[in-house]
Length: 509
Image 1 (spheres, rainbow, N blue to C red):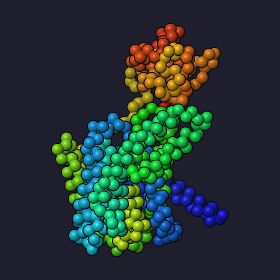
Image 2: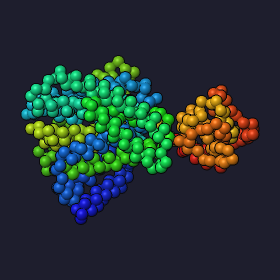
Image 3: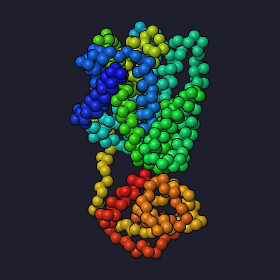
């Protein structure tokens, strides 16, 4: 019992230190992952903590679950409207670009080391994917403002290239360890994994939206539990039938994030916090795995591989995938430089060790060194490179709560007629315009505050705060009938109305 208590205390201390250390990322301009890894290394057997940990299967399992949560949160926070213009190029970078990076790096390692061709290609596959969390933590911390399409392309590529790297790694391990495996069979397996992953991710995403909107739980605290359960079900079920679980959870998150559902804002915040916890747990665990003394023998080789990856393999892959696109040479060069390595390479580096690949330990140590140098070199120079290349976009600033021109809103009462198509629907599914906020609902002789899950009934009276354009849209839709009692109460918004509007937005979201 005391051992369990000690583990809990140590785990909580490491997480607490990691949370506090994240405040340094904005000042130092380094990705949070580097700090988390450093904390794990300091707490490890060769650090001041003295915690001995070498359970690679457990670390791999923790990493897989954590990565699934991180990818879902990334999809949930991605707006389809922003990635749609770069969808084709983003998918190309995430697939062909990842394959090209792995191939070029593998050929270089084959010519410069004693590793076999398959082992060298395996090293290339392990470090072929980029890390979205690392990239955008740097952009936010250092206040780097890139053009919208460049940001969107980086976001789409970083969030969707992990399944390709996972497939390449597992396939090459199979070729090394299984005598009866063939390249042709692996190509068929790739099509099956990606196809099933995309299809089931979309199907599960739609099921999530319908299920969360219609389940009508009595306790709000169960909605995050339900959402988390559906995410892990999506990952597990897809992987079980042979699809890519990582691609499935990313697409499911993309579907959920771009459709209306109840408790949307609170669930998004929940998964964002869960993704941070997953990152901290994953990086600290991976940091504990590393023995710094074992990095020294591979330092020279790792520096050579890192240099080729940063200056040749990654840029050439980007140039090939963006050939003939509207992206300028300066933008392509920046995209090539921004490809930071992070969580996925270190997680994938545990796969060869668990599978018993002869060069597994060497691959793991080289990969770990590549991630460290990538975070230190690229992470700290992205702002300088963007400025040097003159690839900068407008600053993204929050819209002011009170603008120079007062926003004229009207408080209007609408009735739900008996034949309205919104009868029986939840408020979140009623299709109200974005500028129309339901402040209050009168049902019979009682007024009640509404939520996104509130179901509309015949005869309900809705007190709506809206601008003129939204009111015109409501009238044109004809699903609600305007009542004359409050129709003329137009004025500039009072403090009480502003507060009510914020409450209503929170409830509907």
